Length: 450
Image (cartoon, rainbow, N blue to C red):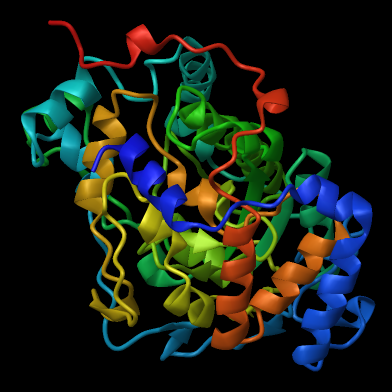
């Protein structure tokens, strides 16, 4: 179903959306939330926002992690679980060239997908996206992400203090969230992708194995910008720029952090959008910044939802890892399926339960369909429709939406309630015109002209 028809069909099924701004201004939200809280045996909101236990090292600049009201508990690492993701057997490392966009580039999908990727790169169709991505490419060289540490190693008598300091450095460099995790070995790619020429020939013989094995990972997360998302359809001209905004920022932060750590005498490698040697979702989970979601291997943060990108720094600097988090997302995704209802490529599964995949459980979403739509989208640049509609993305800053995320983290019944409230208020379907700041060039969004 074409994207605009998919959304139109969804809107026909929904009750009339309330004017949530008038609702919030009028104070009716307070009464409604109080009633909902009463039915759920709720504590006052201030108590609901607290977290139990010290699951992370506090930063001086961000002494309290903003979970947006979700009830969060901390979980331990072991051989059977990475956070709340169940591990059933050996998780195999895979080649970087086997992920979706490289598969399109290699001709493993449709000819249209390969043509659109190579001749008219899906990110580069919009000139603003192109400008941001071009800068991000300047961070690609290996000498930007790695190098030899200084000969003199600075002593670190207190790893907790150093962990706090590294987080403060990242926040100072404009990260929105930072976490430190134990680096899972399967978080590395088996091989780096070869050159563009080799990929177009589907020749992986020049691929370089990833041999690094470092014990810790620092993950930095940057918001893709709330107001832009509120004004966007999720798959229009600006959608790739939202990704590039966060990719280039996390790339800059990770490159600086890695270089700083090396200057202190410790090994460190940055992993970012244009030069990864590691897979970001397991690292994000290990660092306590999200849980696996219905979309497959994408992680959701309690406050930012999908509305983020991350980069990482692997290192042997002595650090104190944060614990992975559990805010009830698996129960929520099991009953919500709003991303599946709105996916223009029908790539996201409606299955209630996860299935085994490469030694762990995940929802069986189809990343081939997702990739093909994103690289061939004739109505925009890439796609972020799941990000647009997910109830875990923060809406306008208000206590009402904070209360909503608290409700959503309380199990399947509460998840259904939050999803229904989300639908009633029209979240995901509304485009707020006052935030539409960018210009569109729809004539550039079609297929490449040979």
